[in-house]
Length: 382
Image (cartoon, rainbow, N blue to C red; front, side, top):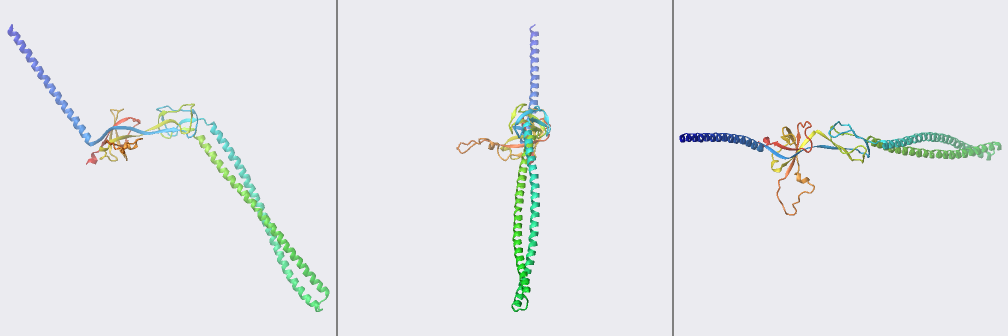
């Protein structure tokens, strides 16, 4: 019986030994596989580290367009919802337009009134211009006629003077009769009177011409009034156009194709000029802003391809390209930059902003999402 128990004990001991050997064998196998897998991923990680400049200090950025009105007013219509796609020119909000329409009507009435006054002044200017022109022409013609009569009277007085002197000598020598002398003297007296009359007519007609020419100053006054009304008309038309623009600005439309990211104002709210109504973002114009350590910037070049891993989409990889390398460290744009003038200095690795264009965002990315980027620097290292 004792021999049988010893055999059973030896059998159990042998089984335990073989079981431990099998466990050790599987443990070695698992450890070997772990080492191989770890080595594979470790080598892969090292290869990626030396061929890519990586950082997780990066986020998705985009143009967040603040849609606002350039005029103040009460919102009477707001047909948008957050998350809704909108097209460029699509209605975002409609303000109450009655007050602005009234201003347009008033400005239009002023333009019509000034335009009527201008037409009247232009007609008056033309009438006065024609009348004074005819008066001047008439006065000039009369003056020219009197000048011709003066020349004729001067010629007659010369002839009468010569006849008077010649007959006077003959009369003194008793060659001609007294009646002949009287006739010559009467002709001389008549010629003298006609000369005086012609000179008086010239003076009178010259005075009339001066008066007619002076009346042309009224044309200048009429012309000045016309020019003044033209200036007032331009000013009134400009005010009318400004009123129409303000009326048009009561209709607020989207400046881009995009998505309504946020609706800020509500129907019935009175807003002021420039107050935001909504925020619209173009999800097809998205980029990544990465802050890369300055020690890794040496091999960064424009156009390099970038691997983009987005926290929101762990199973999706995006591709990008470097489109801008910051001209200054991000710390330089802080509201209160670090000052070294106090003498206390601690060297800190700075970060340079790198702008990365997403090749095909497909409206999946949203501004503010956190990402990890890896910039392929293999070509520059070669």
